[in-house]
Image 1 (cartoon, helix red, strand yellow):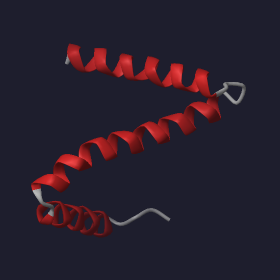
Image 2 (image 1 turned 180 degrees about the vertical axis):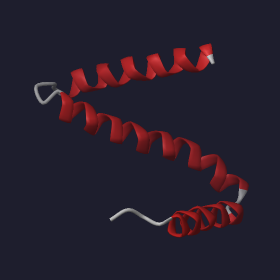
Image 3 (image 1 turned 90 degrees about the vertical axis):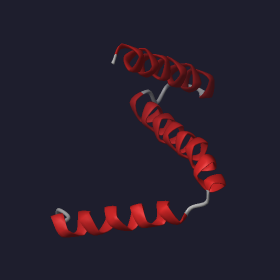
Image 4 (image 1 turned 60 degrees about the horizontal axis):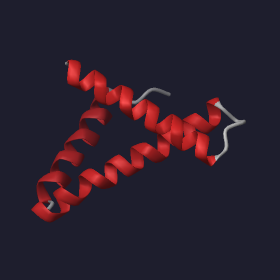
Length: 76
């Protein structure tokens, strides 16, 4: 079942309202937390793609992918 446009709009609106209520300190801390969350998701994806990778290989691949993303941002 696909979410409706109305539901998507409501969720977005709620996120915006929550963000507006955050203090400056909370906003500053949110960046690193979101980055760590994204890294966790990427690690899990790498593990799914490469079941044979040990933890060190997963970290190496994560760093490789982050480096690619950084280079792409610099080109933009």
